[in-house]
Structure formats: structure tokens, C-alpha cells
Image (cartoon, rainbow, N blue to C red; front, side, top):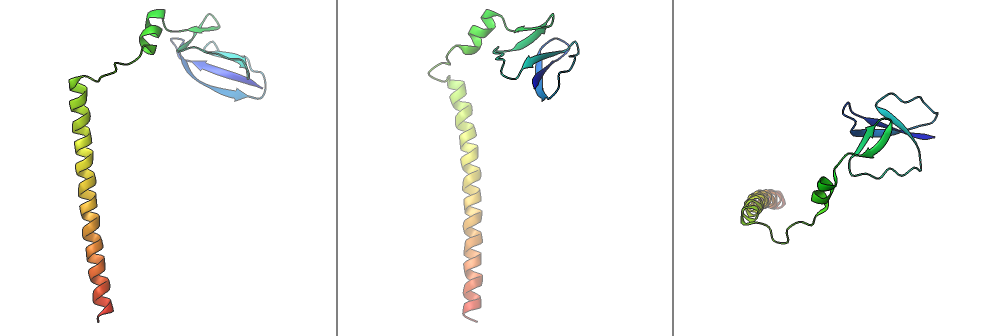
Length: 113
């Protein structure tokens, strides 16, 4: 059993599949053992070998910690989204209460007929 890794025309990783029999890989594929560890941030196929597709600067940028405090703009956007969600939840709850009141009224009318 082998892993068949597939790469796009630029050599960047697309996906993989498990194959039961050994196959001859296309130029945009790489065959690896099932237990072979291929650990890259952005795998890239270059001359038949899988290498890191990011530069050191790109890796450093992608793993640096996020700012502890969100910016004022981010806070405003987040609060506006939360406000919109809360309004929708409030409307749904009001509709649910109205439905329940109507249901209770109908049940009461059936009971007292």
C-alpha cells in the first residue's frame, strides 16, 4: 500500500490517495510509503522531490503570534456582527413565543369547548 500525492501544474500540493498497488506516478505525482512523514507548511514537487514551498520569511510570518489586543476596527466589525446575530436570535425567540401563545390558546379553546 502506498500514498499517491498529487500536485498542480505549479508543483503545489492538491491532495493524496491511498493506492493498493504500486503505480508509475505522472509528472505531477509523488509516491510515498503510507507511514512516510511529509511535513511541510506548503508541500511543493520540484524535480520529483517534495520540498517546502514557502520561504523562511513566509513561514515566520505564518507562525508569528497574533496581536493580543484586536484593533479598534476589528472590535467594531466583531461587535456589529454580534449585534446582528443577537437581533436575529431575539426575533426568532419572539416568533417562537408568539407561536407558543397561539398554541396554548388553541389548546385552551379545545379543552373548554
